[in-house]
Image 1 (cartoon, rainbow, N blue to C red):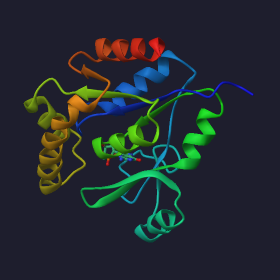
Image 2: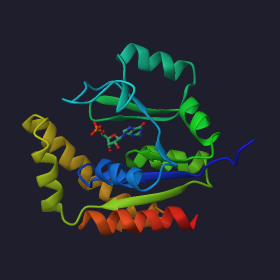
Image 3: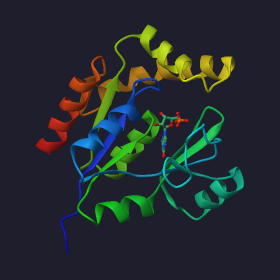
Image 4: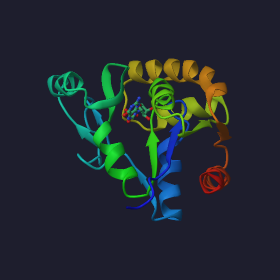
Length: 185
Ligand code: 5GP
């Protein structure tokens, strides 16, 4: 039996660059993998079912809640997002470094259920830059953008609850800092 892998929670406000940071971390090690979450939101252009998310209907998501399939789930904006217990079990059993890229409430819940996990909060360089990043995705309506910005500002207040805080000003530096954290566990 292989060693059980470690669990890293990568969190922070929308627009902090969590997914970009994750994509760079994967390039540094074959042992780093991400759990695929379940969501009820519509796929964005280029997103693939089973790769970026498992895209499901609200009915299906609620069925999974009923079956106690999630280690954590949240309603974020108008949509549900959740992490399947089966995803964590499958990936940690293989001795991988398992990264969960999730928002702050889910992060707090995971830390409660899995205290030995390591939580990292990614901080955007400024509120202005955070706004630019959310707007420049170009895939949200004006009211969705405003809603995401106000959620993001609230999310910033959670940063002291994390094991580590890393500023994503320069992407390479941010990724190297998080990679060092992972290697030190
Ligand atoms: P987006 O719609 O931009 O893909 O995701 C919205 C937010 O939900 C992001 O902060 C993302 O990290 C978070 N998120 C994605 N999957 C999960 C999940 O399984 N659980 C929780 N709690 N948040 C998630």
